[in-house]
Length: 528
Image 1 (spheres, rainbow, N blue to C red):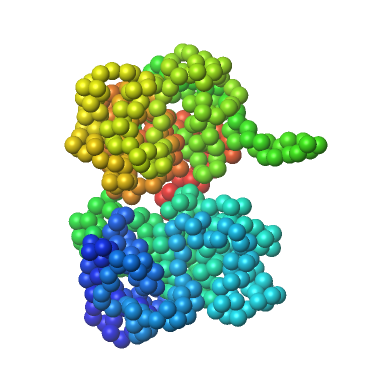
Image 2: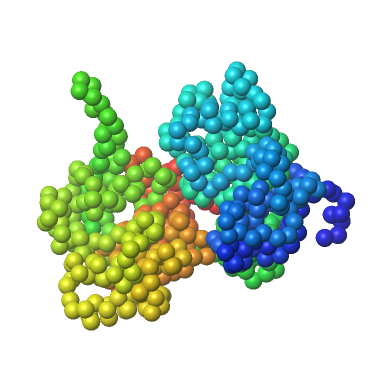
């Protein structure tokens, strides 16, 4: 570390170790944050990035946590500092934005009240002065019509707007250091890019330091000046941003850089149609009273599509574009108007009881494996549940099918008696795929199956889906806002905006020459 002795660091972490209930998650970590720089801390889930960030502000749970080493802010020791000292710093000199704004914003308070609290606590501002400052902050973070938003509650804002409000709260007292913990994971690529550019411009404008935590290296590239790569609680590499991207030294850094799902699937031969959807529309009532006309939100607006046997159709669009609604309407889980033909049979007129035999043929894998797997059932029970309903057979047969399908998705069959919470996110997603696969369906709807996973795990799940498709000739309907994954999986694609299809065609052609401005915007945002 030659040459840095001169500059005074804002934060100095030395030999930081953190253990939860005797299990070490951060090991002997040393890290500096310099005034006015953007430092990125990168690594997969579970590498200890968030724990390191939380240690700076002493936000870790007290019970069962053991922290040793030193964390200094402008030479002042924070480990073991008094609550009063920490309170002065938190939100004032050092502020933090969390991954999920919904959990950090109070659902019962308006936006004005939430930002106002911080201003009152640290700056003693209230009334008109506070309101003027809040409007200034909302403008700063790019909220449209800020005056109208003052009285809004968090649930009335979109994910990107909520994230902007969080940033405004964090900036209220002009902190010297802003810690951003995965600030964009839950957002669409286009919004993601805007938020990151916003953070970068704020950092430069206000001259503050930014500690950005992310698992996506490519995202960091456009913002950070320095990058530290973390693996299993240790920093394995730190370097200037450009140096790291041009010549990564550690094998793990190289693995993270290479974790984009690669390749394009090509297959232009025409096959028989498994699913045909014509002019499908879904409306949601928006309220209306006794004497008022009912208003409807048109979530899906006259969409037609075909899926060929053994191929994947990618459905792409931002959050709120109507893609998941479309998927649920196709499976007849939502009421819709229009025609759905599946394996030559019209499904739109069937009752739920008549749909039953068809359910075996159409299976779903959802975005959040945790929410869709019952915590009280073992893996073997979860997978065999569908067999009991749709394909009754002897216990022995069932067992054999469960073992076979677990081997197919790359899980150890011996783990079938364990429960979902004992597995990682990527493994849980494999269990969800196994559950769908065991019934040998004619169509699997994949609704954002990789969005909650790390890039390296995403790559493995995409490779698995391709391998299974190849092996069993599976047909996928794949919904996603992640273009890199669509590119690697889908033969054909449709792009949806506001419930309408704005572009369709073979994936390679759409990626090579997108026709619609919206598709071009999505592609530009995915590859900044």
